[in-house]
Image 1 (cartoon, rainbow, N blue to C red):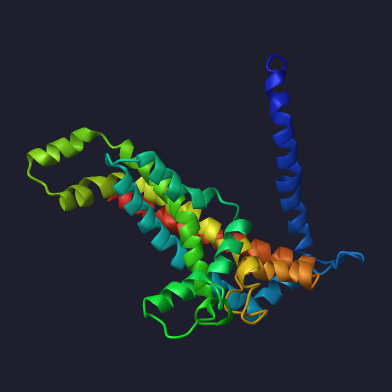
Image 2: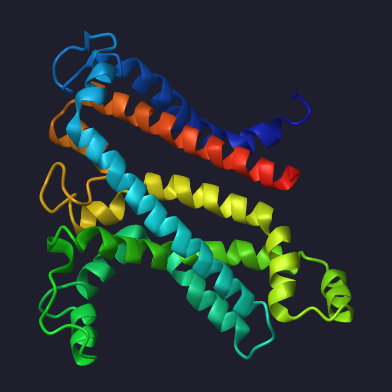
Length: 291
């Protein structure tokens, strides 16, 4: 360490930020989950009361269902779409770099800006969604996309698919380019068609990539907050609304109801749920590999 002190010096800013905003925050929120605190008064120790309340909170149960709906509705289509785009862009076509950039651009667009863009697209009076759907004769009158319980969550899911498919595409593209061409050459000699090559060679060899994409997108979708906050504010209506996910319910308890202890307990409950889902996915992946 004495010899390489300059390396630690260069890492120090990042390590300090990590220690303050991750390690310290995790420790503090864990202690806070056993307390009541409204940001103004003194903290009161309540033991496991916050965690007991979780099992009686109907809004929390509804938010778990909304989160599961959002995660499945986002992760599955974005993974399939990302794989499809990667297969198309793995070929030799003109302006290949332009297409790759265009499809990846939504992923690096700040979420607030992307949410405001889609808020305009879904606008009832002058949004592009209603304009083109009416022009094509699919709908007869404007749809209130973000103000209807039946369409609010699907509308946010479509936006999330648009925003995350580029990440899956980029990772799958790297995976496709890492597959040795000898496998395909041998398949051609055996007379395998394109579907057989995809099903027997490409998809199995992309299993580690698929596992990575699904895990990362699942965790990201479960924690998704910005689009719901900007586009629907958890509604319609407010608490218990059609788009109130666990992440948004944590935010409401912390910064709207000033129940920081209960919000911390919700956050750790969300961690346990995510850990359980990720572990099940990992076990399923290992079983597939071993078989």
